[in-house]
Length: 355
Image (tube, rainbow, N blue to C red; front, side, top):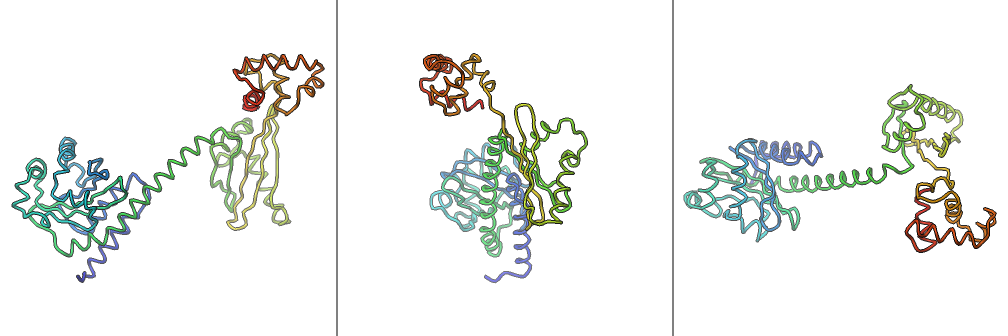
């Protein structure tokens, strides 16, 4: 069938609308907007089902065309739809019309029409089934009163099928990536490594959660800031950049900030390709027996476990602490009881988690 130039223009406009953004929460509204560009109708729906045809969720335009109670009713009778076997059993992927299965008069005599569609004055439907995955089927539906759908409109619906399915799959990928990002950020929030990136003009492009935390901790007395970055650090970046211009051999610069029990190491790296600068911030903690005090150990027991974690033998520890080999062994027995472990390796594991 030969489509008109105006039909192709509508199709291209619909595809542009589909991919106007990537936010998963906007997928249904973008799809409905794209369908409405293709053709008119009294009501347009985006419905999600599981692989067996059990209704899961919906979006509709106009938004208030169907009440929550009416959609609950639809969920209960959706399996009685005349197209249901083709969509969920035969896995049909081509656009379907109610007239493919029943005349309008026959459709009016079905239970699903009298229990649901009659309330909405829906006489004709053009449905695009999308087999997204074995566990997910999406149907995009145009609903009309009195006037049916043409062969051209069916073809347009078929042509938009692949772009819609692609948008759905992309949305699912973005949603998954966002979830991974949230999980990763949560997992790394207490890690001792963070990053800052700066643009060509020295503007802050990105600051990781850990980097922000470390800056607050190590620059707590530096109230002067630019884009949230302490001016002392900004000045260091600018100074290093100036040195870099005079001597390109400077591929990276390093700086350290000391605190009582820890050190912050800053490494400035130049990205020649993008003209950007990256600062990697990494915190190291100074290990001492005092780190183990929270385990409920005595000062001497903490010293013994500290050297155990350093890989020392009982003989080595005895020499370091000026006590007998037997005393070291007795301290270790008590440490095992306090920590609730049975082996030297297990005690080391507990101790290392505090250092």
